[in-house]
Length: 298
Image (cartoon, rainbow, N blue to C red; front, side, top):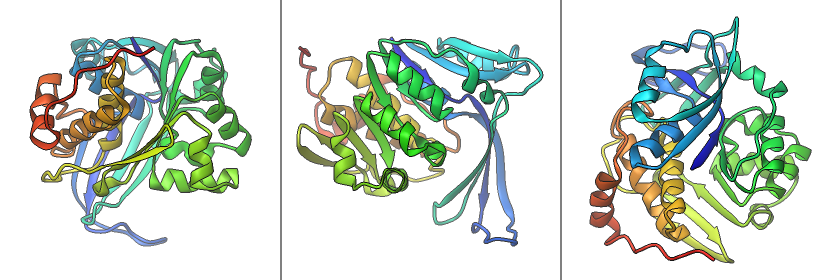
């Protein structure tokens, strides 16, 4: 069982010709309302890949009976939710320009309840965007911890990052989040990598890099027709974690994550084009060869 901690949200995804500067505006050329939230996206990706997953999240009293709840039930996602009366489920407003750059505005809504909620002790947990202090408490109490600060990296203090990284086995981040963590900690990328057992840094169209066991491995991105980059990182983590619990090597897990992400970016929305394990294997073989058999972990 993989446990995912973080936001469940409703995404308002818009296309714009360019991202406006301060005190300026831009035209929205396309807008869709879809299921999202970093943790929920990862949980959905894991469920479609065929692994058992439990989502720990906060939702408003508008979630019960919603289409989103029905979707999660269809996928078979187990849920440990804090339902907060008088609030609504978090909402994200995302704007992507023609160059692929993105800006997000996030309304926390029910997720404010993370700050005062009891943190669970979990055997294997991935912590996505959520309240920093809550994530720190989860990391302290859990056995195997995967951490992804996401766009909430700006909310973490130096002390919180030090605490959560000291309890993390895997760190996921993109290049912007790596830079911000280094600034907050007053350290270098190399020193940041040494703080955890394994680090995976994604670089958008330039692929990703795995740092493990003193070695560095670059995993190229798979060329596809990009429709929307939203959710690429979440689906990468879903693929990695699904392969990891099956016993595959970290490098193979990164490749599985890369393939999983390649499906998601072909369509608008984080949960609209999730691959099954068999679909992932078919594309994996075309780009990386036969997926190696998992080796037993000691």
